[in-house]
Length: 376
Image (tube, rainbow, N blue to C red; front, side, top):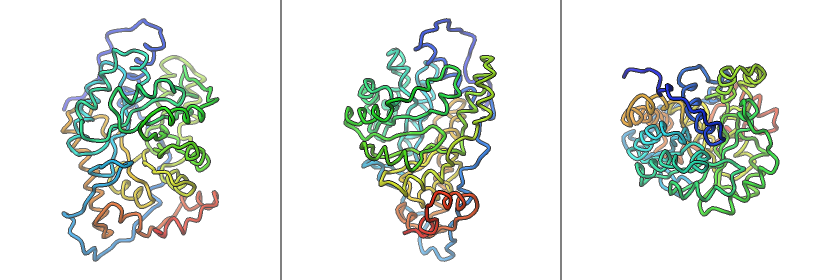
């Protein structure tokens, strides 16, 4: 597979409208993620979690069942292809490959923010291709907290089973054209919950969700959260490179300063589950099946991946995406076999060994790490 620049940028778009700028950002974000080193330097804290090895698992690995309940819907495995893109003509093929892989594996798939298609309906097919290609799996729509009036349209556009409302204050703070007015965001989310007929989940985009935020979200009726914690792609880092391109020295410096800002994924999962009854998707730095197993053992419903399959979705085929995702699923099966787990739900009752910065962080937050580790 020969790799070059994923998109031909020989064509320029002089349109300075908001819709056009939104569309251009879609391509810039993908290219930066592929061309630059934009991963967090801080870890997810999953390395501070260990399972207790079971030398007598007493199960047949080939009979392990990965099927799970995903917000009331069936998923063949507790793995989600997390939101990545859409909203530019050149991203349609990416979403088609991701959706094809999701359909082949029977797992949920999300789309990137649908704002661009709401602003410019000619871009809707970059999103509708997902449901067309994946008719039988859970599909997750995506809109911002301030886009109350567009929420129903985002859901109907792709016949979505769930709606993710994304939160990205860190990215907005670094983005050269970012909007840092978050007044009324919680009220907007509450209005979205009331306006759509599908479960609403809240999705952070790389900085994690805290106990306090999770409690506020639970009070207004959201069904769950996708923690989007620290440890994967740094969107402050992505915007740092965009700021450099725009010769915006102040924003570039802020991008460096806040590159690793936020709550590590494992810690965020624990914080949310310690304070609420919300279902949790663990995204942010999930890099193998063992990470998925650890997230499920903490109590997460599923784990999500984006960056690990982006390159295959851009340069390769849907089969390449499937192969990469199957690597994750096989790692999960091995972790389940080595802990004697026949079903996904069995993981949540397994005792864990917690150590290092994760234990220190839990102590500082007043969370009983022994309870977390006990599997109770």
